[in-house]
View 1 (cartoon, rainbow, N blue to C red):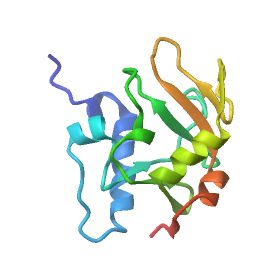
View 2: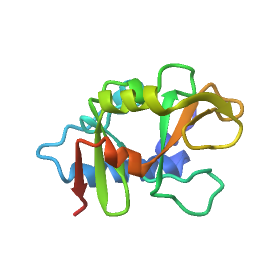
View 3: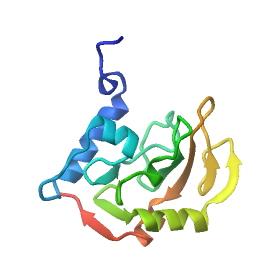
View 4: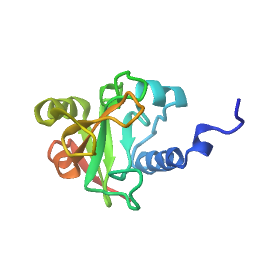
Length: 154
């Protein structure tokens, strides 16, 4: 067994924790999830916090104009969209876009094209080669439209 944690092995996990902590600074008495709760129940600080991502991992820059939604995880189980968090907080450059789980699930049902693509495409289903995940990409603009709140970063 390796003596390194997942966070030491994968720099993007460390970045995720930094994003979660930045959002938690806006909350009174934040309640952080354990690693197990984060992985199995998909919540971070009563919210599932999502940082700015790249369209493709090979891209040089992150893109605040899109966000990935995980319908099914890499193990084939339901993804974080269907986890235990009641709200999601999506990071954009200067704000946090807070979206209720039910609103996000309704948006997916109404707007995602149930067609698979081999290249990341807005509003279509995508799964990465060799994985059982199903993900889709949406615009940050649409997340703002269905948001419960938009909070300016400190």
